[in-house]
Amino acid sequence: GDSVTQMEGPVTLSEEAFLTINCTYTATGYPSLFWYVQYPGEGLQLLLKATKADDKGSNKGFEATYRKETTSFHLEKGSVQVSDSAVYFCALSGGSYIPTFGRGTSLIVHP
Amino acid sequence: EPEVTQTPSHQVTQMGQEVILRCVPISNHLYFYWYRQILGQKVEFLVSFYNNEISEKSEIFDDQFSVERPDGSNFTLKIRSTKLEDSAMYFCASRLGQALNYGYTFGSGTRLTVV
Image 1: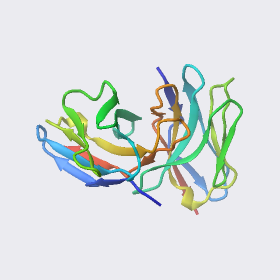
Image 2: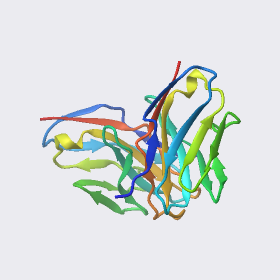
Image 3: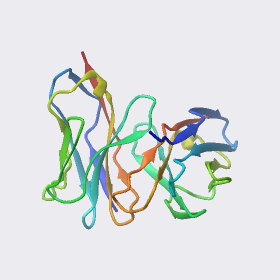
Image 4: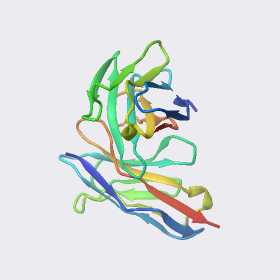
């Protein structure tokens, strides 16, 4: 079945550092790919998405490119802020329309 | 911005007791979901609900679980006889439509602790 694998956390960075959170997936067909973010005490929020190969999703300075050849959708940000501290979830949605989530990666950004 | 509201935020219950987790989806949304996340593990799909019936459920969603939309606003998840392994964060979500371009809105979760 479909699955998503994310890098283990926590990822700890200093403010203004470059962020990469790796995500790879296994799916049949051509799923849509998502990154969700959960800030402390809040629900999961859609951060960005990409619906086909080579699409780049972007939002709030975060980017991720749908790479079919490597089955990856890595999340990147050029300069993180303390306010980016949160848990980030990679997810895919295929034919059943029900998203399959990864475990989440906690990001801690220090001033 | 419209929100999905979940109550309570934290529930502690004794093993074998029944619990009801409550959710108020966004008012014009038609599709409703429950997910759970056991600490340190994946967010797992439990069940989806549309037109007053279950449309899809995972193997986790056994006879111990049930969902209901008792009125026009609430969407509840009931666990009949809780087990220790039911301890998890439970997320409710809703969406307006089923096509991939319709986004999910998640609640902030209910942390269930079974002792």
